[in-house]
Amino acid sequence: MSYRLTYEQLLADLHHAYLDARRHKRRKPYQLHFEAHAEENLQRLCDELWQRRYQPLPSTCFIISDPKQREVFAAQFRDRIVHHLYYNYVHEMLERTFISDSYSCIRHRGTHYGIARLEHHIRQESLNYTRPCYVLKMDVRGYFMHIDRRRLLDITLRQLHCMTGHRCGDTRWRDRVDMEFVEFLTRVIILQDPTLSCHRRGSLLSWQGMPASKSLFHSPEGCGLPIGNLTSQLFSNVYLNELDQWMKRHLGCRHYGRYVDDFYVVSADREWLLSLRQPIGEFLRERLSLEVSSGKTVIRDVCQGVEFLGAYLKPRRRYVSNATLRRMERKVPLLSGQHNPWLLCSSLNSFLGLLCHYRCYRLRCQLFLPMSGAWRYGYFLRGVCKYVLFPDAS
Image (cartoon, rainbow, N blue to C red; front, side, top):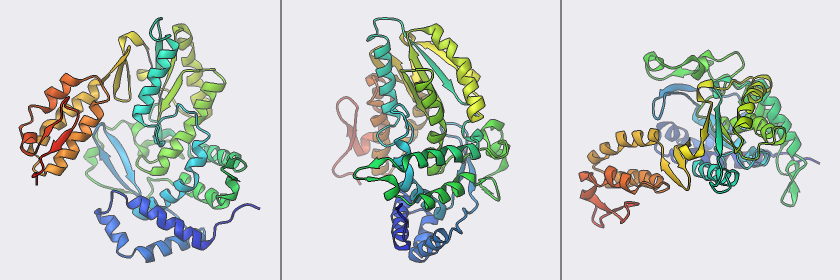
């Protein structure tokens, strides 16, 4: 007998999802508005879900330009709660179908993990840098805007149904999760067209210079996931998991990894890497309706350096990439005018925490030591690896 969710349990799960959704958002106006009548709002939302009447409300669309120009669709707060509810039900189930070298938006598998894995693959294939080795890097053009929602729905439901009989501890997934309710939410969330009745924030001039392949307003009919939703991150991995499995099982790519739509293959055979480009392009086009970004397809000799996830990898060492460095050089000088010591401390340590993963002591000295504003409230530890406030800083 499969598990069936009760109304009381659904309400309790919604409350837990609400606490997840408001984390780091306690002072946001939309959160405060919802919190003012939280019990009543959660009860109403629970009723809609229980009676299968739930439909997402129109999103807010806006443009961000840092680190690059992107179109973001922000769901309303009640819908973010539902996204967290859905994520809590299925993320572990779906993540168990992913390969270990899928890095994005998975706990303990972030950018630093991805960089370390690429280094691991290079060391293995090059026999610890004792023979020539090459990295094929590829990228999907306008990935989020060209995901076929119907195809994604079929893939997601197939994966969920396959996992229902698998064990999770002492029980099976079908004994822990109400699959009928999960299927209902899967259909509602995936098939939503975020452009319908959406509210555009900011001037239309903000969209100038945005390539059509990067905007949902120009996506083919039935295609596109909104950047900004928690579920979009999960579904993006589900969709390209088809590519991951095919690369590993069919092409036999032992040293392969992917972060969102950027993926690589490491091999000592350069000609074999060249031969992979055509079948990969055909698979993406025929099976997933995606196209390879031709301008970002490169084969690099590892001795010349490989850029990946903000790092520049050289034999036995890694540096911060030029793109990341340029963004820091723009932002760090602005911190000298920060008069809140706690905000200054957290900002500086976020930069230092990133840079300490790379071989860049001189760079840290050049960037941070000349900051006169930083010395008013604290000091840098030896090695310029951490910023510490004076005890009397206020």
